[in-house]
Image (tube, rainbow, N blue to C red; front, side, top):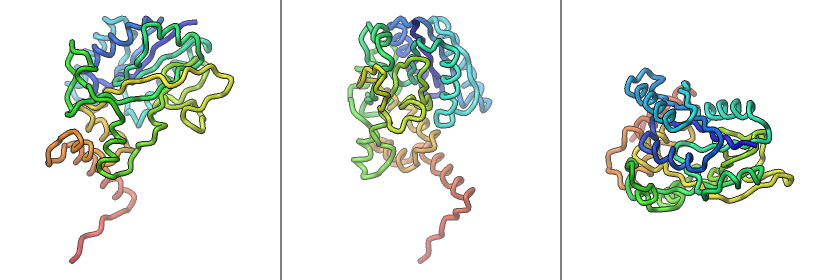
Length: 277
């Protein structure tokens, strides 16, 4: 039985993490490494983004990955789901597939590969690592030192500003590794396909539970990343900006998201009322 690793790597947001990420997962010595390099900006004809995709392709190839460039919109994870589901279907059912987003680091010991082989599923939960401000990662300096605070940022933002958002604990659940014959909902790898509850598995499956996945998403690109996901509202982006010490001038991503929401409302025939006195 082999242990395969596969990922969709977003170069629009995570190029500053690429060497940290590669070194982290190569250290586990999985049997095969596949990565799809994706840039939504490159699909829009941005030369800089296309060049970054090509640069990432070469970095992954030199590191021993089997890399490809993939086009198309991310669509809240639908692109990831299609790629991973197809990839898993061509692998032996009893093999294992490990997946991680480009801002996720499985917090596991050196014998992680042996632990995977001994179980049907490795189940984890995400814990954010972040700093007081939003900044890029620096190569050569340990990420834990660059992002020394640990917790769940969205929940802290919701509590601080008294708002409700996507704070439910089940979205912190992750399927880190799974036998290829067990269908995973790869939109976010939060649960199995058709699972009624996150973190719920058939009693017949051997599951190693509650392993840590370190989430280094709270960096300089986070507001642009959140703006591209339909389930985050402009108000939440604004609160995140303020949580990390942002100024009184809204970040362009906040304004972009606000305009997108207005356009969606107008498309549905919802016309904002004019204030009257």
